[in-house]
Image 1 (cartoon, rainbow, N blue to C red):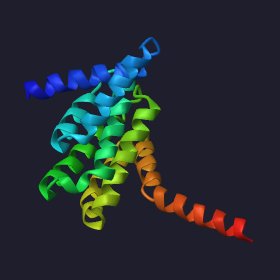
Image 2: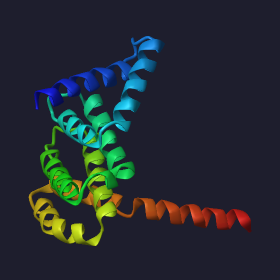
Image 3: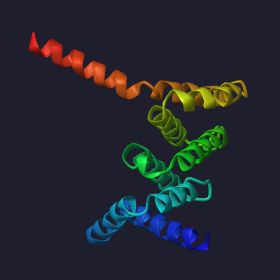
Length: 176
C-alpha cells in the first residue's frame, strides 16, 4: 500500500507539472510522457493509483485527471481485469458517486464521476445495471444533489449511442 501511495505522489506531481502554466516545455513533455507510460503500464496499478488520486485531499486538477485515467481504463483496458475485479471496480465507482454528491464538490468532478459509472454500466451490460439500479434509486432519493448526479449518470448512459446516431443523421443530410 505504501508503494501505491508513492506512485500516486509521483503521478500527482506529473499531472501538476503537465498542467501548470510555469512548467517549462521540457518539463511538460517529460510529465506527459510519464503519464502516457503510466496509463500503458500495469492496469491494476493504474486503477489503484487513480482511485487514490480522485480523493478530496488532491487538487481539483489532479482529481479530474485521475477520473479521466479511470475512464481510459474502462474504455480501453477493461478486459484486462478479471470479472471479480470489474465487479469490485463497479462497486467502488458507485461509492465514489455517493461520496461526490457533496454540494461543495465541483460540477466537473461530479460530471466525470457520473460519466465513469455510465461507462462501466455500458461495458458490463444489463446484469450490472440490474445490480446497481437499487443503489441508484436509493441514491437519487437521498436528496436533490444526489438526484442531480443520478440524472447526469443517466444522461451519460446513452451518450455514445445518441452522438453516433446524430452523426449518422448529419451525414444523411449532407448526402442529400
